[in-house]
Length: 225
Figure 1 (tube, rainbow, N blue to C red):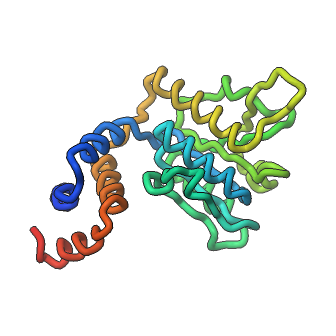
Figure 2 (cartoon, rainbow, N blue to C red; figure 1 turned 30 degrees about the horizontal axis):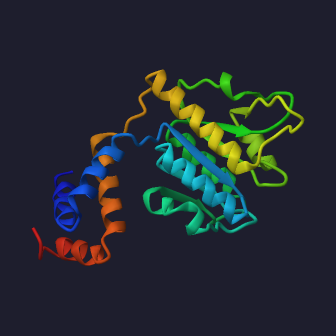
């Protein structure tokens, strides 16, 4: 951690005071207690809007499953959110959904898949005593059969009009907003560790400084200490 701290000190010499203060404020509100999974979303406007919402609500990690569709996004819609998030992409095997779920479970997450069927519970009844990964399925058909079979719980957003379900980006925003506020209200252990916060600030500094790779190379070679 000492080495990382020194690296951030070197990088922060190239940041404005305002940027450094902003990093400190925002990293304290980041969480990995709630994370979002996008399974095979193919419309870039949706993936971009979801990134923007996640970043706004302080969710740091997004997991992207690419079975039939390659991940794409519009930077204009995302408004730079991609640069501040940690994206985990699963696209190496025939069915990447299983790989994603296994990785999440290894980190202690329960898998909550958004769906509409008899066993689905209301979003408002979801147990938040465990870290939770919310899975949003593809635009037309929803979550895959594998995701449905491997889920721990199925959730839905209660609606009271003729429209049974929301657009995937709108639904994601509602879910993230509610779960993050409830997580804080219930005082779950949602904050990042000091080491995680430092790692994130290094990541953000690298993304903010055009010549950051040269600073890192010089530090790692011993030219900067």
